[in-house]
Image (cartoon, rainbow, N blue to C red; front, side, top):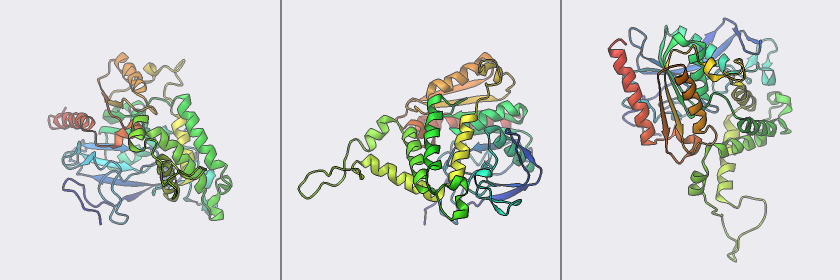
Length: 387
């Protein structure tokens, strides 16, 4: 049994929200009926003005904080959200939504297609970041939230927060973009493609209809996760954790030579890959990494003019990057900040010197948490003053 801390939101279960109104996607495809898994923390005030939406990254979900009493899992951002934490649930009503197409409760590739009576599989519609935002808007309407105090996310979640500011500028007061980017680099797209090919070429993939064969492309998923995990950690962090340490020596004191696990870092990556393959859906992985690739709000403006793409935003921004994040490096956050400043928007930028690479946005770096805490305290003060 997990011991609950005093500043935890406690035990929490998701609710399933049903939506019947068709959702037209960026691809032109339509999702006619769908469910979204949602968790909430804190209390929505009478004016519905203290709501904060948390957008999740690739392998996360609606379970942002607290403990699920059925699985005993702790929320993926539990160190950030809760009573007295940087995002204080004594002051804010926080919403976590599992994105459409994910595999943690919301309608996705493993769900039954009512037209065929079988799981959607690879026939599930292609998703884009903008589609998730449109679905999240319906959740806001369900709760009667006309305007979020803030929309916040890290990594892929940061892309969604930015898209909120662009798509619905009058529906949020603040946009908090952490360890993210206004568009993937060619290198990032390349990493995603290698990961997808590992899945698609797995003999158990069956063109995405592996549910019908009662198989799982575990090998492909495992390799995909290993590739991704390498990009989430910095070189310094990996060196500190594993170095060049090797595993057991033979009886004569000599190391074994071969292609099995020898180095500690190999053991770690294989463990992460195998664990991931047991709980994550392969079609979901393909879909979400494609959404990452597609996100490019500047593409329709000349030669990718981000300044023009952000011309209509109204939200105030907090943007945070980490010095050792080579997946979404600080220069991509600076690119966003410069475009916002060129539009004369209110933006605070923090570049945190942290050794943990991209994963730093999930960790307890004190400087990072102080920045976020101060920003939300500022929002809370504005709410009490009616600003």
